[in-house]
Amino acid sequence: MIRNYKMLDFPGLKHGITTRVGGVSKGDYVSMNTGIFGSDVREDVLKNISIAADRVGITASSIFMTHQTHSDRIFVIDESTELTSLDVYDQAKISERAYQLYAIEDHDAMVTNRTDIALMTFHADCVPIIVYDPIQHVVAAIHSGWLGTSKMILSKTLDLMHMRFGSLMSEVKVVIGQSASVCCYEVQRNVYEAFEAILVPEEMQVIFHAKADNLWHLDLKEANRLLAKKSGVLQGNIEIDSGCTVCAPSLFHSHRGAKGGNRGMMSILVQLENKTL
Ligand SMILES: [Zn+2]
Image (cartoon, rainbow, N blue to C red; front, side):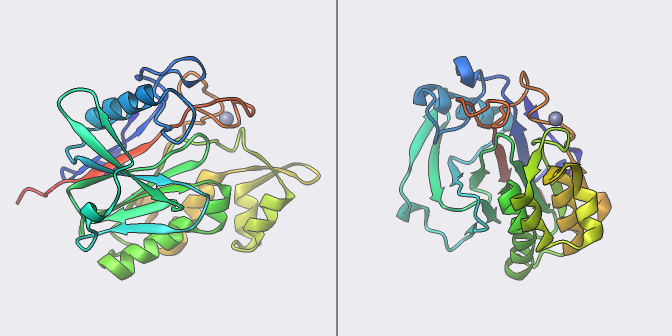
């Protein structure tokens, strides 16, 4: 029920991306729905978040959640961030462990070098991206739909990690998670034009597959891989989850699959741990 990635298999890192399997939600939200900003029964969602955090092995009591707006804004949590000055949005608790949930408004990426907090983003078809620098011990969680990708939120996060934390692009690991794949992600001219502004024609040909006049299938995972490579991330340090959220409704929540109806959300959950010396 939680997706793990070889690329992020480090002793100092807890990570996972939830699926729709393994939770307690009912109806359209069956069963692991972490969408706390949606309209599912709140108690069930809080239970799901607790279950997922426990399964990932989150030990921090503070979880920072993005309240996403398809922006390119990146929230940094470092030593100077005073947790006591922030409002707790809610609490998730099922057993002994209680998680304080902090909602970060109007941001679509978070970066931290702290070991006492976890990061959480929300996805239905949009691409979840985890970036980890095992040398500087810094991690990022990113929500990157077509709009965020065309605003180059991944590139901007990598830049920030370099400038602020000294991350070298030759060292960082990038995981591009389950999302709407090229098989199911039909887009129109407005999306095509947004990418024309940031990519050269050869790159456009790789990520847009023409289907009809003004109709394409977009390979958003490949677009993010391209951006990572252009930032200097090594090809061998990028792992892509082949899972298509639209193709597999029993495994994933999907915005497109729900055709405008209720649907749940899946989440990145990630936390740094103290490296053992
Ligand atoms: Zn598909």
